[in-house]
Image (cartoon, rainbow, N blue to C red; front, side):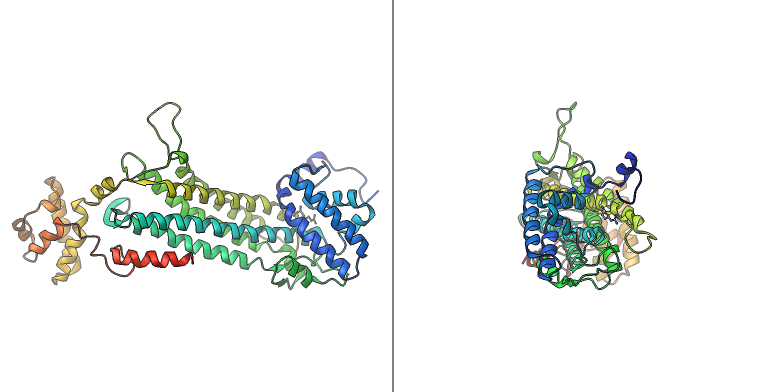
Length: 452
Ligand code: ARG
């Protein structure tokens, strides 16, 4: 027998078991075990023959896991124990040597860092797909006008291309954040043992090379208790999901009958069970709602880490649920956003009608007065009065005559009439980063360069 005189309480098992969650780490667990065993043999810590038997058993186990026929048992607390148990069943006595110079503490840290490295790479690829979809949509709607909003009030017109490209810049920062996450996954924790290092002449560098790490961790205590890369990954995921929630919110508004700016593709919407005319933007709504969930994963996991003494504590077992949920939720949100952007059909007339609202030229009128030497505050107040009186008379600014305008200020002349009548509002925003077409074309080139 061992140290214990009674079997675990079933509820202890239930609270202690992580197998159902950490099962999906198996490919990383097999890969690190393979590298570990090869190193043990190369260092003469275990015999070459035993190492061969273990390697074969690992391949058999890998096959079973891949095929979904791995015989899990109730006593398997986590994926590490399940794999080790099965390797021993297959390899016999040699299997008992796989865990030499290794602890589940450095083992789980290694699985997690390998998982996170891969998750960062997939997030980057998915972000790039969305960036490509946005660039394509921007290109094909380069000069389609729509109102730009502040406070959700029509403010100044912009081109749809300019609006869509705004998301490209958010996403390019998200991509950088995931590149940082990957950089935080570059040192191998394996070989740190339970917390203090191991009593064997291991070659950690060899294992690191084999598993694609740049080097090995410098401090065994830190190595087994470091989950910063998970925090980094959840933080990058939370912000990216938050960006997507803003896109989702706009798609919900824009696809409403009130706006009518866009029709979402059928395959990304649902019908109502009651009202046959309805097409609901469920996926766009869920882009809004999934973001707080990822933020919750981040904040919950930070709370788990809070005030934990060094080194490993079982609390840290909870890391996986948050990490997996955050990564999976973001992957789904990115796929949905990409699908909706790719299939969106914009309504040029509805958008330009909304953008042609004469009131929207008010800022340009104020700027004209400023160019004529009127102080900005004064011109702002004057144009505010013109807008108020036009609204009271139920008139558009573009219907004001030269005489009427002159009545407000002698500085308002033919140019003011032309300014209100024409829709050169967009093209006048030619400052760097502005919505004028020359600037949008520059932006598109820079955005395309992002994807290399
Ligand atoms: N399932 C555990 C986890 O995910 C593995 C490490 C267990 N280590 C230990 N000393 N009990 O954290």
